Length: 428
Image 1 (cartoon, rainbow, N blue to C red):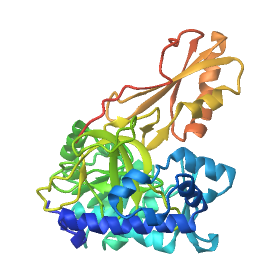
Image 2 (cartoon, helix red, strand yellow):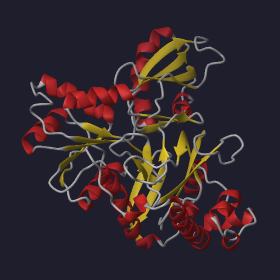
Image 3 (tube, rainbow, N blue to C red):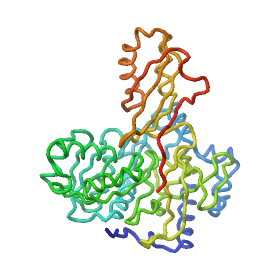
Image 4 (cartoon, rainbow, N blue to C red):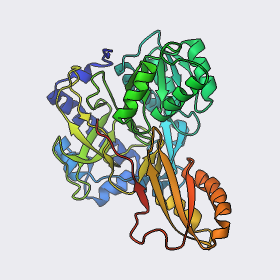
């Protein structure tokens, strides 16, 4: 299915695009310095002023990175938004929460920017007026569902705000309302396929799905093919980070994900030397969103590893593309769309003297991620009770369900990693 262009910037020559991004970057540096107490102090400590940044090269060489830890710490020490906030609180119109926790404030201008950004992803996938989109992402606290919703409005689609869960109802609505576009995680789409078969619904014959817009978790080639064959539809992947937004999307050639360079400047750095690497070399994604009024984030380290290419795509877009997400550059990992860190589980276990070391194991034995928290205990006779109790506590702390396996003291090898990701990461 041929995709449509949302703006002329998608096909702009690279030299012109670089000038456009340079202008946007310099504007964001000035905005952050003048309006955000955190960045004002951070730039002063680095010995730089906005006037010192005259080009993209200056920006990449002189401006310091920002980490998620800085954002979380600032908000914890000066709640709720920390010193990053660059507008009066009265100007805020939406606030979301992402793991950390991080409070993500948006002004009306920020909302409109995000609306257009995500609409570009939907349109790139070939959606248009007359299509019916069923949004199965969460509308609660986190931004995915609502932002997909307003993007669909921008794209002129008919919207079914389904939210998460209720698989039988989801299938029933798809059949009765003639849903043509699915928006959600690939693992939930796989569950819908299973439920449809239990209901006696043939996904190919009884449903009208033609496009699936996926995100929040990996979409490996085998699962993509299985789902496309099951529903007779085309899946499009996207990549984003909660506090930054959705930064990339696929076109019909599925040869990497186009960066929305109209709204983001992406760099790939060596996580050890912190130097930029050349296109085609793997490293950590660093992002600077443009037009972010409430919460500017300058050279924000995502912790995700990828490769960037500037080769012009067959679709005609000149935007750079990232060639899949190759994994995490630190101990964080994403499971079912949520970032997991061992410390979250360790904080639970530390409450109980009867418990010892732990290890988190992430696997994908089939189409879904599975997470098991292995915990050492002193009394094997109570292992069943502990497994039941910890399963609920880890769900609250980690925000997703996990299996719990109790083992005797010393069963976890001394040199075992706190988090062992046994999934195979796929490049696109």
